[in-house]
Length: 146
Image (cartoon, rainbow, N blue to C red; front, side):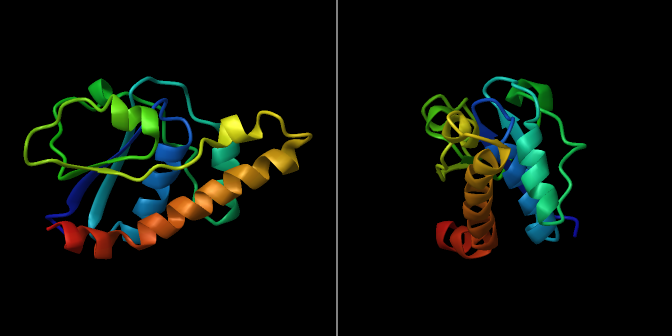
């Protein structure tokens, strides 16, 4: 499809939530949306995020952490902020770009006190599944906005 919706998922460090959103969107909505992800900062790709995505058959291991500036001059139809900090500090985008906020808990922060990796992964899985639900509902949400 030549005229895919250009969508950026934006979070603070582009390590986890925005990376999962990009992978989920490419997998479930890739026929109509061209997804990208970036952060206000670059924190590197979170390996536990890669692991929980792989559990549902989506490989994000080749994605890499980047900032909005790393994307160069790119026009987006939508920017979806997936954390409060990114929403509050969202860079300026041209007027035609619609900014949408869909906040999700931060898995690394939730998992910080986990007793073991399995307990930590449970936080990542929950947030992954919440983002998946959001991605699956995107076409309906976008129709409401247009």
